[in-house]
Image (cartoon, rainbow, N blue to C red):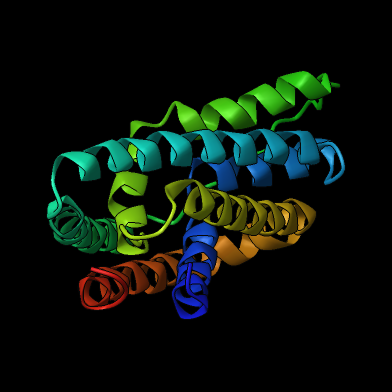
Amino acid sequence: MALDIWLIYLVAVIGLSLTPGPNSLLALTHGALYGHRRSLFTISGGALGFIIAIALSMFGIGLLLQASAHALMVLKWLGAGYLVWLGIQVWRSPPPQLHMVAEQRRVPGFVLFRQGLLAAVSNPKVLLFFGAFLPQFLDPNAALLQQFVIMAMTFAVGEFFVEYGLARLAFTIRPWLARVGKRFNQVCGGLFAAIGAALPFTGPS
């Protein structure tokens, strides 16, 4: 993967990781309830779930590329349309709400890990998103396995650190999201729409 394409991908990954979603809210919740150290189980499970989702999406894309030389360009344009649509949905979505529970329970680490994993792989929008997102950065002339390792590890590491930051700041970020959560969604939605509009014209084709 070329350095300039990877840098664009890294920026997109950071933007995606900062967008409120099931795993980020789960990291917030577990950080508030169990502390940032125990939330590492949750975050690690989510990172593994995203790697699995990326693998399913990328190698499915690889099979499609073997069937049609133009499949990547078609996927890029379809994916761009989905990213713009997703940006509109994020823009219009209400700010996330985090409800605390009165009683904190000592939950085993493997249960927290499993919850993070399932939050990532059980959401059908995850596979749909990666199916739209990843083709924007794939080079059909490069080895798919190498690109998978780079892209999956970049996404997993980026998501891990963002969610860990959310877990550490769980108590602080809740009142902030209550105040500016709507504007935050609008900024993230605008970024998704801009990325979707621009990416079909960049990178390998």
